[in-house]
Amino acid sequence: MIEEAIRAAVGVFVVFNVVALSVLVLVLLERKFLGRLQQRFGPMRVGPHGILQTVADALKLLLKEDFTPATADRRLFQLAPFLVIVPIFLPFVTIPFAPGLVVRSLELGLLYIVAVPVVSALGFFLAGWASDNKYALLGAVRYAAVLVSYELPLLMGAIGVVMVTGTLDLVAIVEQQAAWPLLFAQLPAFLLFLVSGMAEGNRTPFDIAIAESEIVGGPFVEYSGMRWSLFFLAEYAGVFATAALTALLFLGGWNGPLLPPLVWFLVKTYAVIIVIFWLRGTMPRLRIDQLMNLAWKGFIPIAFLNLVVTGAAVLIGGPGPGSPLVILGGLATTAVSLAALSLALRPRRRSDVRIGFATRPGDDVADRPPAASHYSIP
Image 1 (cartoon, rainbow, N blue to C red):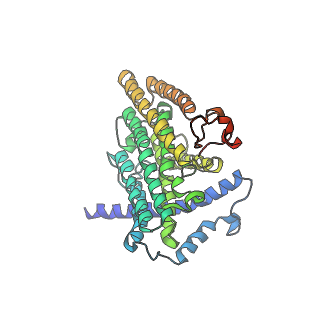
Image 2 (cartoon, rainbow, N blue to C red):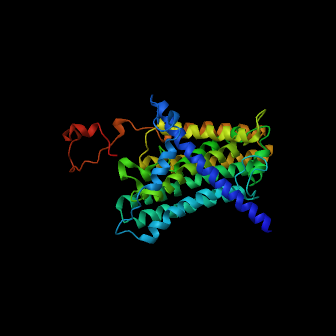
Image 3 (cartoon, rainbow, N blue to C red):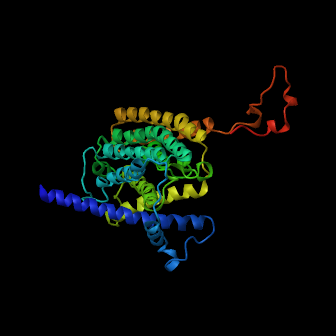
Protein backbone atom coordinates (compact mmCIF):
# COMPACT_ATOMS: atom_id res chain seq x y z
CA MET A 1 0.00 0.00 0.00
CA ILE A 2 2.76 2.41 0.95
CA GLU A 3 4.82 1.45 -2.09
CA GLU A 4 1.86 2.05 -4.35
CA ALA A 5 1.25 5.47 -2.80
CA ILE A 6 4.92 6.40 -3.20
CA ARG A 7 4.92 5.27 -6.82
CA ALA A 8 1.77 7.31 -7.51
CA ALA A 9 3.29 10.39 -5.86
CA VAL A 10 6.47 10.03 -7.92
CA GLY A 11 4.38 9.60 -11.08
CA VAL A 12 2.38 12.75 -10.33
CA PHE A 13 5.60 14.70 -9.68
CA VAL A 14 7.13 13.52 -12.95
CA VAL A 15 3.98 14.23 -14.97
CA PHE A 16 3.66 17.72 -13.46
CA ASN A 17 7.24 18.61 -14.36
CA VAL A 18 6.98 17.11 -17.85
CA VAL A 19 3.83 19.11 -18.55
CA ALA A 20 5.40 22.28 -17.14
CA LEU A 21 8.45 21.85 -19.39
CA SER A 22 6.14 21.08 -22.31
CA VAL A 23 4.45 24.44 -21.75
CA LEU A 24 7.81 26.19 -22.23
CA VAL A 25 8.29 24.27 -25.47
CA LEU A 26 4.74 25.06 -26.64
CA VAL A 27 5.12 28.79 -26.04
CA LEU A 28 8.37 28.89 -28.04
CA LEU A 29 6.89 26.67 -30.76
CA GLU A 30 3.85 28.91 -31.07
CA ARG A 31 5.88 32.10 -31.31
CA LYS A 32 8.22 30.59 -33.91
CA PHE A 33 5.37 29.04 -35.92
CA LEU A 34 3.29 32.23 -35.94
CA GLY A 35 6.40 34.17 -36.94
CA ARG A 36 6.86 31.94 -39.98
CA LEU A 37 3.21 32.34 -40.90
CA GLN A 38 3.65 36.12 -40.78
CA GLN A 39 7.00 36.13 -42.61
CA ARG A 40 9.17 36.99 -39.61
CA PHE A 41 11.64 35.08 -37.44
CA GLY A 42 10.02 35.20 -34.01
CA PRO A 43 12.25 35.25 -30.89
CA MET A 44 15.93 35.39 -31.87
CA ARG A 45 17.71 37.27 -29.07
CA VAL A 46 18.02 34.92 -26.08
CA GLY A 47 20.08 31.82 -26.79
CA PRO A 48 20.81 30.26 -30.19
CA HIS A 49 17.91 31.20 -32.49
CA GLY A 50 15.94 32.34 -29.42
CA ILE A 51 15.47 28.89 -27.89
CA LEU A 52 15.96 30.26 -24.35
CA GLN A 53 13.37 33.02 -24.71
CA THR A 54 10.67 31.21 -22.75
CA VAL A 55 13.15 30.38 -19.97
CA ALA A 56 13.97 34.09 -19.69
CA ASP A 57 10.25 34.94 -19.66
CA ALA A 58 9.64 32.43 -16.86
CA LEU A 59 12.46 33.92 -14.77
CA LYS A 60 11.10 37.40 -15.39
CA LEU A 61 7.65 36.39 -14.13
CA LEU A 62 9.17 34.79 -11.02
CA LEU A 63 11.04 38.01 -10.18
CA LYS A 64 8.24 40.47 -10.89
CA GLU A 65 6.48 42.14 -7.97
CA ASP A 66 3.10 40.69 -7.09
CA PHE A 67 0.33 43.28 -6.77
CA THR A 68 -3.08 42.89 -5.16
CA PRO A 69 -5.69 45.62 -5.78
CA ALA A 70 -6.58 47.54 -2.64
CA THR A 71 -10.31 46.90 -3.05
CA ALA A 72 -9.98 43.24 -4.04
CA ASP A 73 -11.11 40.32 -1.91
CA ARG A 74 -7.58 39.26 -0.96
CA ARG A 75 -8.27 35.62 -0.01
CA LEU A 76 -10.33 34.81 -3.10
CA PHE A 77 -7.96 36.80 -5.29
CA GLN A 78 -5.02 34.66 -4.14
CA LEU A 79 -6.99 31.39 -4.25
CA ALA A 80 -8.34 31.75 -7.80
CA PRO A 81 -5.12 30.91 -9.75
CA PHE A 82 -4.76 27.60 -7.90
CA LEU A 83 -8.40 26.69 -8.59
CA VAL A 84 -7.60 27.18 -12.27
CA ILE A 85 -4.27 25.37 -12.53
CA VAL A 86 -4.95 22.28 -10.36
CA PRO A 87 -8.02 20.95 -12.27
CA ILE A 88 -6.16 21.44 -15.56
CA PHE A 89 -3.26 19.24 -14.37
CA LEU A 90 -5.37 16.49 -12.77
CA PRO A 91 -6.41 14.83 -16.10
CA PHE A 92 -2.75 14.08 -16.89
CA VAL A 93 -2.82 11.53 -14.06
CA THR A 94 -4.90 9.17 -16.20
CA ILE A 95 -3.80 10.15 -19.74
CA PRO A 96 -1.73 7.25 -21.17
CA PHE A 97 1.32 8.33 -23.18
CA ALA A 98 2.17 4.77 -24.27
CA PRO A 99 1.32 1.21 -23.18
CA GLY A 100 2.06 1.08 -19.45
CA LEU A 101 3.18 4.73 -19.36
CA VAL A 102 0.38 6.17 -17.23
CA VAL A 103 0.17 7.17 -13.58
CA ARG A 104 -3.23 5.55 -13.02
CA SER A 105 -5.34 3.83 -15.66
CA LEU A 106 -9.03 4.19 -14.82
CA GLU A 107 -11.95 2.23 -16.25
CA LEU A 108 -13.91 5.50 -16.24
CA GLY A 109 -10.91 7.52 -17.39
CA LEU A 110 -12.67 9.43 -20.15
CA LEU A 111 -15.49 10.47 -17.79
CA TYR A 112 -12.94 11.64 -15.24
CA ILE A 113 -10.98 13.64 -17.83
CA VAL A 114 -13.96 15.54 -19.25
CA ALA A 115 -15.45 16.20 -15.79
CA VAL A 116 -12.53 17.42 -13.67
CA PRO A 117 -11.25 20.38 -15.79
CA VAL A 118 -14.68 22.04 -15.58
CA VAL A 119 -13.84 22.93 -11.97
CA SER A 120 -11.35 25.50 -13.32
CA ALA A 121 -14.33 27.63 -14.35
CA LEU A 122 -14.82 28.39 -10.65
CA GLY A 123 -11.29 29.77 -10.51
CA PHE A 124 -11.89 32.02 -13.52
CA PHE A 125 -15.12 33.35 -12.05
CA LEU A 126 -13.53 33.94 -8.63
CA ALA A 127 -10.65 35.78 -10.31
CA GLY A 128 -13.08 38.11 -12.06
CA TRP A 129 -15.25 38.62 -8.98
CA ALA A 130 -12.44 39.08 -6.45
CA SER A 131 -10.52 41.58 -8.60
CA ASP A 132 -13.20 44.26 -8.12
CA ASN A 133 -12.76 45.21 -11.77
CA LYS A 134 -15.61 45.51 -14.24
CA TYR A 135 -13.54 44.24 -17.16
CA ALA A 136 -12.41 41.23 -15.13
CA LEU A 137 -15.97 40.43 -14.08
CA LEU A 138 -17.21 40.76 -17.65
CA GLY A 139 -14.50 38.37 -18.80
CA ALA A 140 -15.49 35.88 -16.10
CA VAL A 141 -19.14 36.00 -17.19
CA ARG A 142 -18.09 35.53 -20.80
CA TYR A 143 -16.03 32.49 -19.86
CA ALA A 144 -19.01 31.00 -18.03
CA ALA A 145 -21.15 31.50 -21.14
CA VAL A 146 -18.55 29.82 -23.35
CA LEU A 147 -18.17 26.91 -20.92
CA VAL A 148 -21.92 26.26 -20.78
CA SER A 149 -22.23 26.50 -24.56
CA TYR A 150 -19.25 24.38 -25.64
CA GLU A 151 -19.17 21.77 -22.88
CA LEU A 152 -22.27 20.15 -24.39
CA PRO A 153 -20.84 19.46 -27.89
CA LEU A 154 -17.52 18.38 -26.35
CA LEU A 155 -19.26 15.83 -24.13
CA MET A 156 -21.49 14.59 -26.93
CA GLY A 157 -18.46 14.19 -29.18
CA ALA A 158 -16.87 12.01 -26.51
CA ILE A 159 -20.11 10.04 -26.14
CA GLY A 160 -19.94 9.18 -29.85
CA VAL A 161 -16.54 7.58 -29.24
CA VAL A 162 -17.92 5.61 -26.29
CA MET A 163 -20.85 4.37 -28.38
CA VAL A 164 -18.52 3.01 -31.07
CA THR A 165 -15.93 1.45 -28.72
CA GLY A 166 -18.19 0.47 -25.82
CA THR A 167 -15.72 1.58 -23.14
CA LEU A 168 -14.59 4.62 -21.14
CA ASP A 169 -11.05 3.27 -20.64
CA LEU A 170 -8.60 5.30 -22.74
CA VAL A 171 -6.18 2.39 -23.10
CA ALA A 172 -8.97 0.15 -24.43
CA ILE A 173 -10.13 2.89 -26.81
CA VAL A 174 -6.63 3.20 -28.27
CA GLU A 175 -6.25 -0.58 -28.56
CA GLN A 176 -9.44 -0.80 -30.63
CA GLN A 177 -7.89 1.66 -33.11
CA ALA A 178 -4.96 -0.61 -33.97
CA ALA A 179 -6.33 -1.17 -37.49
CA TRP A 180 -8.64 1.82 -38.04
CA PRO A 181 -8.50 5.18 -36.26
CA LEU A 182 -11.82 6.58 -35.12
CA LEU A 183 -11.27 9.70 -37.22
CA PHE A 184 -13.24 8.18 -40.12
CA ALA A 185 -16.04 6.68 -38.05
CA GLN A 186 -16.45 9.79 -35.88
CA LEU A 187 -15.34 12.70 -38.05
CA PRO A 188 -18.15 14.99 -36.77
CA ALA A 189 -17.21 14.14 -33.17
CA PHE A 190 -13.55 14.86 -33.97
CA LEU A 191 -14.37 18.35 -35.22
CA LEU A 192 -16.75 19.04 -32.33
CA PHE A 193 -14.27 17.84 -29.72
CA LEU A 194 -11.30 19.77 -31.10
CA VAL A 195 -13.10 23.08 -31.66
CA SER A 196 -14.98 22.90 -28.35
CA GLY A 197 -11.72 22.16 -26.56
CA MET A 198 -10.19 25.24 -28.16
CA ALA A 199 -13.18 27.37 -27.11
CA GLU A 200 -13.01 26.17 -23.50
CA GLY A 201 -9.27 26.80 -23.48
CA ASN A 202 -9.74 30.45 -24.56
CA ARG A 203 -7.77 29.91 -27.76
CA THR A 204 -8.08 32.32 -30.68
CA PRO A 205 -10.49 32.75 -32.46
CA PHE A 206 -12.66 31.79 -29.46
CA ASP A 207 -10.92 33.88 -26.78
CA ILE A 208 -13.73 36.36 -26.08
CA ALA A 209 -13.21 35.93 -22.32
CA ILE A 210 -9.74 37.52 -22.47
CA ALA A 211 -10.14 39.68 -25.57
CA GLU A 212 -7.51 42.40 -25.14
CA SER A 213 -9.12 44.67 -27.73
CA GLU A 214 -12.50 44.55 -25.97
CA ILE A 215 -12.09 43.89 -22.23
CA VAL A 216 -8.35 44.53 -21.74
CA GLY A 217 -7.43 41.06 -20.47
CA GLY A 218 -10.38 39.24 -19.00
CA PRO A 219 -10.61 37.65 -15.53
CA PHE A 220 -6.89 38.00 -14.74
CA VAL A 221 -6.37 41.59 -15.86
CA GLU A 222 -5.44 42.60 -12.29
CA TYR A 223 -2.93 39.77 -11.80
CA SER A 224 0.83 40.11 -12.18
CA GLY A 225 4.00 38.12 -11.70
CA MET A 226 3.78 34.47 -10.72
CA ARG A 227 0.01 34.47 -10.15
CA TRP A 228 -0.57 35.70 -13.71
CA SER A 229 1.80 33.01 -15.00
CA LEU A 230 -0.40 30.32 -13.41
CA PHE A 231 -3.27 31.34 -15.69
CA PHE A 232 -0.86 31.30 -18.62
CA LEU A 233 0.44 27.87 -17.60
CA ALA A 234 -3.11 26.54 -17.33
CA GLU A 235 -3.96 27.75 -20.84
CA TYR A 236 -1.07 25.95 -22.52
CA ALA A 237 -1.43 22.85 -20.35
CA GLY A 238 -5.05 22.79 -21.54
CA VAL A 239 -3.86 23.00 -25.15
CA PHE A 240 -1.59 20.01 -24.62
CA ALA A 241 -4.39 18.06 -22.88
CA THR A 242 -6.86 18.80 -25.68
CA ALA A 243 -4.36 17.71 -28.33
CA ALA A 244 -3.40 14.57 -26.40
CA LEU A 245 -7.04 13.53 -25.95
CA THR A 246 -7.76 14.21 -29.61
CA ALA A 247 -4.85 11.97 -30.58
CA LEU A 248 -5.99 9.22 -28.21
CA LEU A 249 -9.69 9.28 -29.08
CA PHE A 250 -9.60 9.87 -32.83
CA LEU A 251 -6.08 9.41 -34.27
CA GLY A 252 -5.17 6.02 -32.87
CA GLY A 253 -3.00 7.23 -30.00
CA TRP A 254 0.36 5.45 -29.98
CA ASN A 255 -0.56 3.01 -32.78
CA GLY A 256 1.67 3.21 -35.83
CA PRO A 257 4.40 1.35 -37.75
CA LEU A 258 8.18 1.35 -37.20
CA LEU A 259 8.44 4.13 -34.59
CA PRO A 260 8.14 3.50 -30.82
CA PRO A 261 4.63 4.05 -29.32
CA LEU A 262 5.66 7.15 -27.36
CA VAL A 263 7.06 8.78 -30.49
CA TRP A 264 3.83 8.12 -32.40
CA PHE A 265 1.80 9.62 -29.57
CA LEU A 266 3.93 12.77 -29.47
CA VAL A 267 3.90 13.13 -33.28
CA LYS A 268 0.10 12.99 -33.39
CA THR A 269 -0.28 15.26 -30.36
CA TYR A 270 2.03 17.94 -31.73
CA ALA A 271 0.35 17.70 -35.16
CA VAL A 272 -2.94 18.66 -33.47
CA ILE A 273 -1.15 21.44 -31.56
CA ILE A 274 0.21 22.85 -34.82
CA VAL A 275 -3.34 22.94 -36.20
CA ILE A 276 -4.48 24.85 -33.10
CA PHE A 277 -1.64 27.37 -33.54
CA TRP A 278 -2.37 27.62 -37.24
CA LEU A 279 -5.99 28.59 -36.57
CA ARG A 280 -4.81 31.27 -34.17
CA GLY A 281 -2.53 32.79 -36.78
CA THR A 282 -5.06 32.80 -39.61
CA MET A 283 -8.52 33.49 -38.16
CA PRO A 284 -9.89 36.69 -36.58
CA ARG A 285 -11.60 36.64 -33.20
CA LEU A 286 -15.31 35.86 -33.31
CA ARG A 287 -17.83 38.23 -31.78
CA ILE A 288 -19.68 36.89 -28.78
CA ASP A 289 -22.96 36.57 -30.71
CA GLN A 290 -21.17 34.64 -33.47
CA LEU A 291 -19.57 32.35 -30.90
CA MET A 292 -22.90 31.61 -29.21
CA ASN A 293 -24.66 31.06 -32.56
CA LEU A 294 -21.93 28.62 -33.62
CA ALA A 295 -22.49 26.56 -30.47
CA TRP A 296 -26.27 26.60 -30.10
CA LYS A 297 -27.33 26.75 -33.75
CA GLY A 298 -24.47 24.72 -35.19
CA PHE A 299 -22.52 22.41 -32.93
CA ILE A 300 -25.24 21.16 -30.60
CA PRO A 301 -27.67 20.14 -33.41
CA ILE A 302 -24.76 18.46 -35.23
CA ALA A 303 -23.81 16.62 -32.02
CA PHE A 304 -27.34 15.29 -31.59
CA LEU A 305 -27.46 14.23 -35.24
CA ASN A 306 -24.15 12.43 -34.88
CA LEU A 307 -25.38 10.55 -31.81
CA VAL A 308 -28.56 9.43 -33.60
CA VAL A 309 -26.69 8.28 -36.72
CA THR A 310 -23.95 6.58 -34.68
CA GLY A 311 -26.49 4.77 -32.52
CA ALA A 312 -28.37 3.49 -35.57
CA ALA A 313 -25.14 2.42 -37.31
CA VAL A 314 -23.86 0.58 -34.23
CA LEU A 315 -27.23 -1.11 -33.72
CA ILE A 316 -27.44 -2.31 -37.32
CA GLY A 317 -23.81 -2.83 -38.34
CA GLY A 318 -22.19 -3.51 -34.98
CA PRO A 319 -19.64 -1.49 -32.96
CA GLY A 320 -16.00 -0.93 -33.75
CA PRO A 321 -13.90 1.75 -35.50
CA GLY A 322 -13.70 -0.40 -38.64
CA SER A 323 -17.43 -1.04 -39.04
CA PRO A 324 -18.33 -0.02 -42.62
CA LEU A 325 -21.77 1.24 -41.63
CA VAL A 326 -20.34 3.34 -38.79
CA ILE A 327 -17.74 4.88 -41.13
CA LEU A 328 -20.37 5.58 -43.78
CA GLY A 329 -22.64 7.16 -41.18
CA GLY A 330 -19.85 9.38 -39.89
CA LEU A 331 -18.90 10.62 -43.36
CA ALA A 332 -22.55 11.23 -44.30
CA THR A 333 -23.18 13.12 -41.05
CA THR A 334 -20.13 15.28 -41.70
CA ALA A 335 -21.26 16.19 -45.21
CA VAL A 336 -24.81 17.02 -44.13
CA SER A 337 -23.61 18.96 -41.08
CA LEU A 338 -21.13 21.10 -42.99
CA ALA A 339 -23.73 21.93 -45.63
CA ALA A 340 -26.35 22.85 -43.03
CA LEU A 341 -23.81 24.84 -41.00
CA SER A 342 -22.70 26.86 -44.01
CA LEU A 343 -26.31 27.73 -44.79
CA ALA A 344 -27.26 28.57 -41.21
CA LEU A 345 -24.24 30.78 -40.51
CA ARG A 346 -23.82 32.42 -43.90
CA PRO A 347 -23.55 36.23 -43.91
CA ARG A 348 -26.76 38.07 -44.68
CA ARG A 349 -27.04 40.12 -47.82
CA ARG A 350 -27.02 43.89 -47.47
CA SER A 351 -30.56 44.07 -48.72
CA ASP A 352 -31.61 41.81 -45.82
CA VAL A 353 -29.98 43.94 -43.14
CA ARG A 354 -32.34 46.16 -41.17
CA ILE A 355 -30.88 49.08 -39.28
CA GLY A 356 -32.44 50.01 -35.97
CA PHE A 357 -33.08 53.69 -36.70
CA ALA A 358 -35.94 55.19 -34.72
CA THR A 359 -38.58 56.28 -37.24
CA ARG A 360 -42.12 57.57 -36.96
CA PRO A 361 -45.01 55.84 -38.69
CA GLY A 362 -45.11 56.93 -42.30
CA ASP A 363 -41.42 57.78 -42.60
CA ASP A 364 -39.91 56.79 -45.92
CA VAL A 365 -36.82 54.61 -46.02
CA ALA A 366 -35.36 57.04 -48.55
CA ASP A 367 -35.32 59.74 -45.86
CA ARG A 368 -32.92 57.75 -43.70
CA PRO A 369 -29.18 58.56 -43.68
CA PRO A 370 -27.22 57.08 -46.61
CA ALA A 371 -25.05 55.04 -44.23
CA ALA A 372 -28.12 53.12 -43.05
CA SER A 373 -28.12 50.97 -46.18
CA HIS A 374 -24.48 50.01 -45.86
CA TYR A 375 -23.75 49.07 -42.26
CA SER A 376 -25.38 46.68 -39.83
CA ILE A 377 -25.61 46.95 -36.10
CA PRO A 378 -22.88 44.74 -34.50
